[in-house]
Image (cartoon, rainbow, N blue to C red; front, side, top):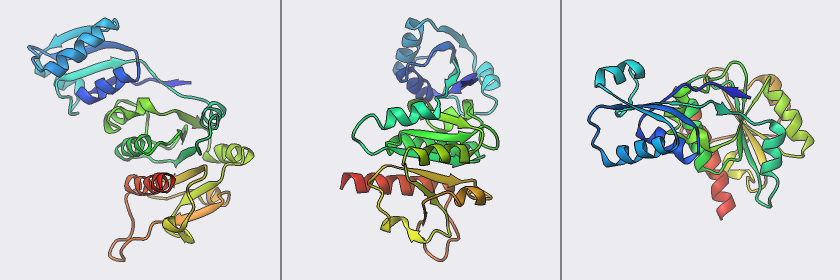
Length: 247
C-alpha cells in the first residue's frame, strides 16, 4: 500500500532519503550551488538517475510554499506501507524483544514527525496509524521527522482496535500512556516486548481502545504542569524502555 509523498525539503531530508534507498525522481537546487555537501548529494542523485534542475531562489520559494528548504526541493517516490502481519513477523524473527508504537489519531504533523524521529532513535520496530483521523504521511511529515520516516516500517489500519486484536493474538502486551494511568512508567517493566499506544493531542486515547489494553501508565510530572506534549511523552516512555533494556 502506498501514499504519495510528492516532495521533500532540505539537505538532511534528501540525505536520509538517499540513505534509505528511496527513488528520487527530480531535484530542484539553488542556482550556483557551491556547498560541498549539497554538491555531493546532487551527484549521488544524478548517479541514481534523478534529474537535477538548477533554479533561482524565487522558484524554490514557490515550490516550498514557505517551508524551510535550504536550497533543495526534491520529488521522491511514494512512501511504502507494510502489512501488520509483516511488521510483527519481522520484529519477532530474532531474540530481541520487539517494541511497537500505535498512534491513535495524532493529527498534528509536527508532533507526528517528532514522534517518528524519537521512535527510530529508540529502536522501535514499527509504527501503526489509522487510515483516517491522523496526520497525513506527506512531505511535511518527512521534513518534521528529519527524514527518519523512511527508516521505520509503518502500517495503516482501519481502526487501532484492529491492530490490538492482532497483537493480542500474537501474545504481545499492550500498554497505554494516559494521565490517569494507575502506575508510573518508571515502575513498569518495559524490558519485554510490548506495543505502546499514544493518544491524540486533544482527546487522548479512545475509551473503547483503553478497555482493550493490558496496562495503563502515566509519567510523573510536577503539579505546576497539567500534561506533556504527546511527542515529548512518547519520547520519555520509549527511552525509558530503552534504558531498561540496556541496563
